[in-house]
Image (cartoon, rainbow, N blue to C red; front, side, top):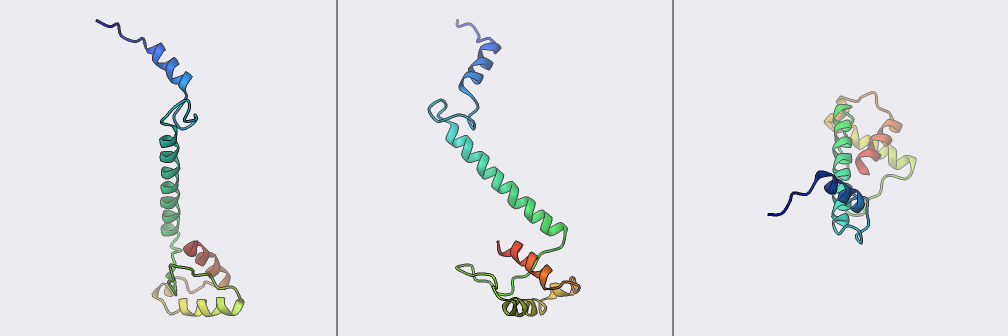
Length: 113
C-alpha cells in the first residue's frame, strides 16, 4: 500500500509550479485556460457593473436611431441638436426633462459605446 502524500509536499508542489493564471504554458499547461477564464469573468463583471450603474442612476437612454453595423455618433452641433430633438419624442424624456444637450451627449456615449 502506498503511503499518503504529506500536505507540505502538495503545497510545495503548487508553489514550485505556480498558479495557472500566473505562469507560462511551459511550466503549467493549464495557464492559457486560467488566463481565458480570468479575462472572460472580468469582462462579464464589468458589463454587469455598468448595467447596474445605469439602472440604479436611471440614466438609460433609448437610442433614437439604431444602426448596429457602422453607425457613428453625431459629429457636429447641428447633428447633436437633431438627435436630442428626436430623443425628446420618447417617453423617457418625461423622466429627464431637465437634461440639456451636454448631459445627453454623456448618456449617449455610454449607450453607444
